[in-house]
Amino acid sequence: MEVASSRASRAADIKLITAATVGVLLVGGMIAGMIWLATSGGGEDQRICGQLNAGSAVGIRQTLDNGGPVFTTGGAGCGFYLALLDGDIVAYKARQEDAGCTLRLKRDHWECGDKVLADDELEQYPVSIESVDGNDAVFVDLRPESFTSTT
Image 1 (tube, rainbow, N blue to C red):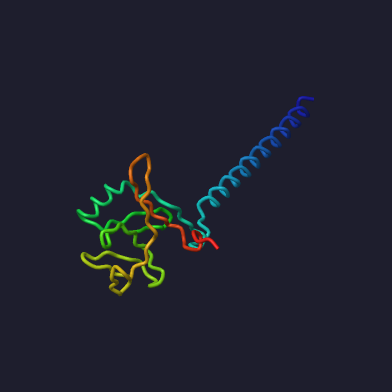
Image 2 (image 1 turned 135 degrees about the vertical axis):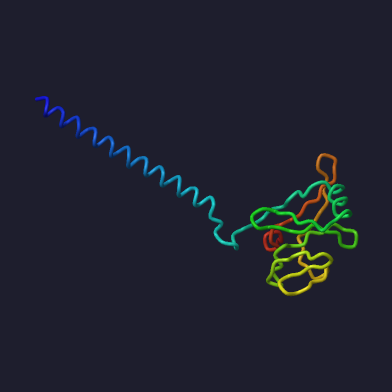
């Protein structure tokens, strides 16, 4: 009789261990799937950057007066250069879509691929100065034009 009860107990233990193993594997698979979904960008076409508060207008102007342009990352590949153009703060797109290349600052000029570009040839993000808690802040709108325009 002890042998029969031992076999029944062992069969129940095997079922419990099997069920627990399957459960752990399923939960692990769901976690891995959620991580994959959260980290997969879906390609460059699905990347949408938002409006970024780049910082204090006074601080940015001082930085640019003392040694700009300055590269700033907007996250998710939405980098840009803050610079002064005719006394105004501008944000040049790091990725120049029309030229099909990535913008690089070379001492006193801009290069994009093997081309030298003038300031007025560079694609820009819209820049605005807005009041935040009583201080002027520089906002750069990193969204694509199709996202920001209304019809």
